Length: 227
Image (cartoon, rainbow, N blue to C red; front, side, top):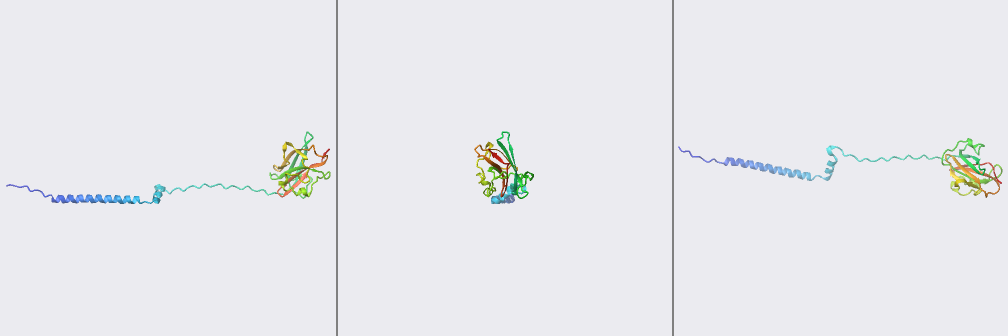
């Protein structure tokens, strides 16, 4: 008996392969579309979002800038001028017999007028009192010539560079070119002076003034006689 071999039909296998190829193609196409979509979303992020991401690494809040705190200056307390008493004044003859060391000390005011011993009053121990000395003629053996025209200037330190009305101009010679007006150091000032060789014969006093704001007072030395 003869048997003839019948060719196998490939129709079933071919259809199955077509389905697989189609599925793979669709899957690849879907992947491509998804990739394009994700890329488009990433591309469309705003600069603000990028900035936020860069400032919030690991979800940590961005550090705020530190503002430097400037120290507040402490105002210097102002010193209020107080009434001035008669200054304590001393006149010491130096060894040469020609020059004097004049010392005046600013004092607090205790009573009207000047006490017999102003050195007993408390010292005004600051650097705000202006001190000045000058030579005046003697009114008598106890008092120098000082008038209202002089005292009207005693609380005006800006006028101290010129002689007072009853001051003997250039009557005193100041050692080392010192000024007859100076700020008292802790209430005290010192001068080394001598009487001018050109001074006329007569009786004189050295007057010492302390001035602080609207307040002032003065004292004078013992009688000086130019022969």
